[in-house]
Length: 319
Image 1 (cartoon, one colour):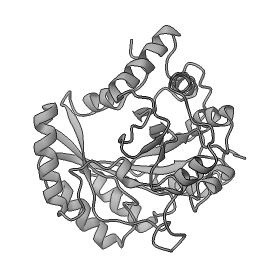
Image 2: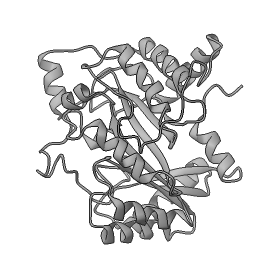
Image 3: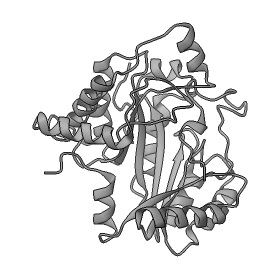
């Protein structure tokens, strides 16, 4: 029995059983929360080196990054189909002409089936979404909106620089145009209670256009404002067993058709301050799957989601 809707199973079904891998691309973007438009230094937790692979180097042209990534991943995972994943910082934060050049450069490789584009919900507009809509006519296009939290108090705590309304607007702009929509959420922001964080599973499920999810625990990494705050005044972070239970509880409340791209994060040991679990990604995933089995539960078991139209400007009402 498959107890949650994993991206791996989705990809095999979507691409005829072929092995699909993501090739990380750093196209040299910045972020409005770093360049002074909204702020400097980024969100309080932001250190892109904590999740950017070493082979992902913005000094290289996109085509070269794609080639090197495919050579590495193809050999390691025996994959022959790839998504070019524009990951670090805000990957729609440029003029549309520049975006089209970069995206098409990645798509030009014959083994690239599409794009995954990480961005902020306040960094898309009609012109940029129209570009993605054109690309989606011939390729798989997934735009991943970094929401992080549906609570205004949490967005203020992490100094995100936008509100929940930006997400509602972005989903409304993107929906119904052949573009797959994903959302990133962070669990364990100190401004929230556990139950508030769990309730986001139910609330995000109400957005019917959202089909993909990345969830991970808050990680405190070096060289961030959050790390300085944590070292001065430590706050609660998830313990290992605590998070395994949380992830299962979250999955139970989540709409069953939402594709799970990630359920946890693993920053490099030399950057990670807390929580330090001493467990690699394979063990974490095995333990989540084992906990689902032990509790005889599955994604969506407690979901009562009804379709929510992002055109409804009211939407869910987070605190």
